[in-house]
Amino acid sequence: MARKKPEGVEALVAEEGIAFDDLTAVDFIACFCMVNSICNDDVDREAELAYDRAYAMLRERKRRS
Image (cartoon, rainbow, N blue to C red; front, side, top):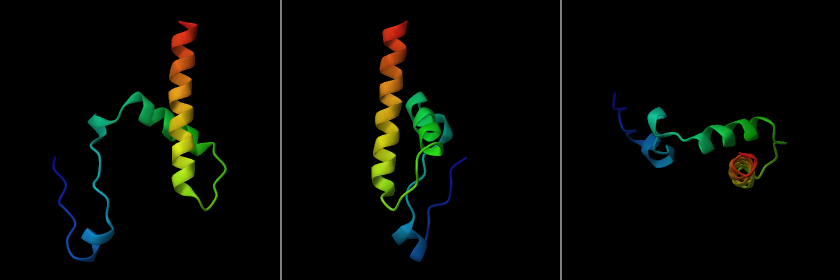
C-alpha cells in the first residue's frame, strides 16, 4: 500500500520511507548493530559504523562458509 506523501511543513523535514520489502540483510544487520551501539550526538557516524559492521559480518560469514 502506498503511503501518502508528506505535505506542508512535514514535506520539509520528512524523509522518504523505504518499503519493508526493499530492505536487505545488510539493513537488518545494521539495525541490530545500532541497537548495541553507544549512542552519542553524531548519529550519522553511528549509522556509518553500523553499516560498516554489517558488511564486515557478511564478509566474515562468507569467509567461514
